Length: 76
Image (cartoon, rainbow, N blue to C red; front, side):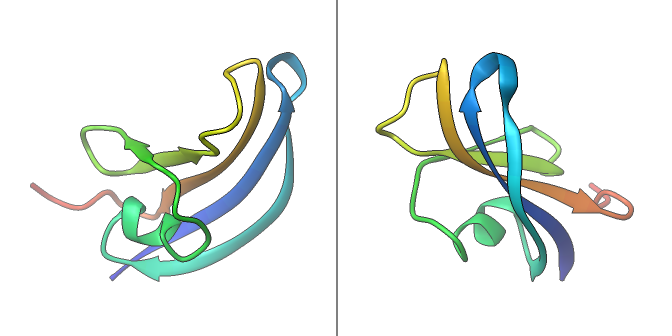
């Protein structure tokens, strides 16, 4: 299992702020994000980070959860 840092980010694009943060163990960033929301997930190709943006928000006024892998990335 990997450990991911989850953060809730929100606000206008030019002034995003992190409001909550915690850690969770999961096999992937999408699985980690699934513990806090059911929004569509976008992740990087290395599976080290991802975000799930609330589908009712725009890119200019964001509400989203972000997952970042802590430690070494998984080996391919």
